[in-house]
Amino acid sequence: MNTVNILKVLMNLPKSEFLHAIISNRKGRAGLIIVTFFIIIAIFADQLSPYNPWVQVGPPFQPPSLQHPLGLNDVGYDILSELIHGTRVSLMVGFFAALFQTLIGVPAGLFAGYYGGYLDEIISGTIDTLLIIPSLPLLIILVAYLGQNLFNIILALTILGWMGTARVIRSQTLTIKQRDYVEASKAIGTSNIRIIFQAILPAVMPIVMAQMIFEITGAILAEAGLSFLGLGDPTHKSWGMMLYYAQQRNALLLGLWWWFLPPGLCIALLGTGFVLIGLSIEEYVNPKLRSI
Amino acid sequence: MRIYILRRVIRLIITFFVVLILNFIIPRAMPGNPANILANENQLPPETAKYLIEIFKLNRPIWDQFTAYILNTFQGNWGFSYRYYPETVYELLMQRLPWTIFLLGISTITTALLGMIFGIIAGWKRGSKIDSTISVSSIFIWSIPYYWLAMMLVYIFGYMLKITPTSHALTPGLEYDNFFEFITDALYHAILPISAITLTAYATYVLITRNTMLDVLSEDFVTVAKAKGLSERTVIIKHVLRNALLPPITILSLRFGFIVSGAIFTETVFSYPGVGLLIYESIIYHDYPVLQGAFFLLSITVILANLLADIIYMILDPRVRYG
Image (tube, rainbow over all chains, first blue to last red):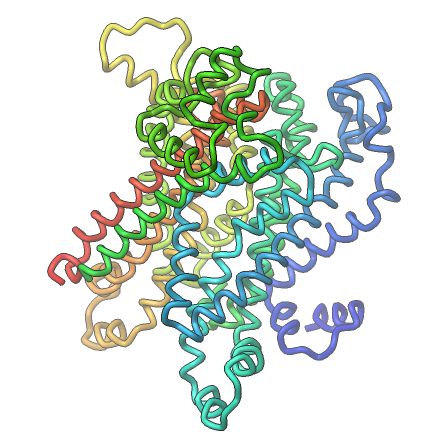
């Protein structure tokens, strides 16, 4: 409980039951610490990185040394500085893609679940169809045609990523709309839109949050994947792009572990951080899952 | 339940047409002339470009283009590769497809088996050390990028321990006396790629199976079975597993897309000569016709895999069989 109080004071949190649920859960606490760590690095990337990641600071392929803890890459850039700056792209793409996916997915799920009928057929049909189509090949042609920049990557991830949220919210809405309080508001003549946004939305909010946090992990992995395939934004340092160059320049064959090990670990660690927070919210919503 | 299967099949047919239409719209919705993609005069000889404009009716109204596109797609006229000209996109993809199907097929089976086994164990022994080991490691693996895991496997087993090949699907230049030798060499080269795809794709599967187990374990009929005095083992095998295994099988069809992504990344890392490596090369060379062909082909593969999963589901679930 001590950690909970300290975190609350530090972050000046309101006495929200919801945040308490995350912080008092072991997984949630671990996740929060990991994510906060990376957010701090992203904010202070310029101050924290020892060199400018776009400037050659020594001969290429230098192994780790005191001046360059992770060595230099194929063109003599400091790898640690690249790694620190890469945090920004991952967090930014992850956050915005997940936010836009939620902004589309939640209303789609709410309307499909609440109104049913033809509207549901259309929305659910679209969701099922998009879920069958393999997303990576489609993502690749979208980004290849649209052009490689962060905006287009976020756009493509949004178009292809809102369905998961919509599906979960739809099935939640189906059960919630049969509850007494919703029936009661209907009986006193509350408009459908008001019921959806004032009675149902608050009830599904924890699930929306859990889902959005899972989507952040998905978007971080997807951006890194696109960059690894050579479709990243060339004007920003990203972990995926570091791995792309490491792969292209035979870092594996040459045994340059300091080049290909750290970016992958960072992606996995940041992703795990978000997944842990998401799971802690899920356990709060569905206590059956609580066990570890 | 019959109706359920029928709906699924109709859904798959609709998906096929959506893919067909997306493949037509995407290049045409982009700025510039669609002829620049299929019949690019900078990339292809002028007479070939002319021929393509002719057969795809690229200088006609959009409706004529659409009918020509549909006709050509079904005849296997998917345009020419910029990079491998005079090879056609169709020929190129068909050479690469068997390797990808080989990887996908085996990885799907290993993913499902491993995922279910570990998921069942974790759910059964919930709260125990085994459960937390399986669950926590799955959560971490969930967030590991496919290609990075593949790179680590190549580095450790291929370069450091030197016990597996580091790339390609077969030993270059090797002649085979019989089919057995060929398949042994192919499997030897596929061990690492399949492990990489399986490891990253199975993690979420474990968590899903575990959650289904927990749901079923808290049902009334399980309590009743226990109250009857049945042993823990009998309850799990006779009552829980039957009910807990169907949802993961249904979800398997949703995993095909992930396994395809896994194949694209893994083939890239291993220089494995499948459709995924072709996609990677095509990105570097801006070979748009090949990228579109690959999207179309992989979508059809996934749609067919879904159909297969539905048939298996129908065989396994008596409610569907006799419904």
